[in-house]
Length: 136
Ligand code: IDP
Image (cartoon, rainbow, N blue to C red; front, side, top):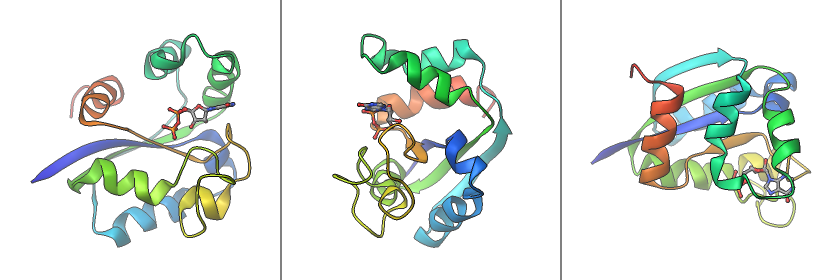
């Protein structure tokens, strides 16, 4: 059974030229791309995207960061795509939680600048895909 998940290459990943690396790992895993777009995020979309973190102390910085430059938004499709991409990404803290071999484990050092986003559940995936790709 196929499912879809929302992946973002965050502004740090785009600035560092790591879009190809992220897309390559998604494709090598066997997942496919249902939609892909380079986009600078409006603040309102960023706020909705990260609504669950509204009360967190890092919310302000997170919004500044995610709107600081273009991101690449990707609708990724395949069997267990949500979990499959979370495994490719690695844990949120790229040093303590993400292991080498994962995107964050291989390419990131700071929790905020952790390169990629991936939806964390079927409910989040549905909500986030509607927000980023309403016509998909
Ligand atoms: P996830 O991206 O692995 O699902 P979440 O806990 O949903 O992790 O956090 C969303 C994003 O917020 C993280 O990817 C990271 O960029 C940022 N973030 C999370 N925790 C912190 C923190 O303690 N300080 C700064 N930024 C954080």
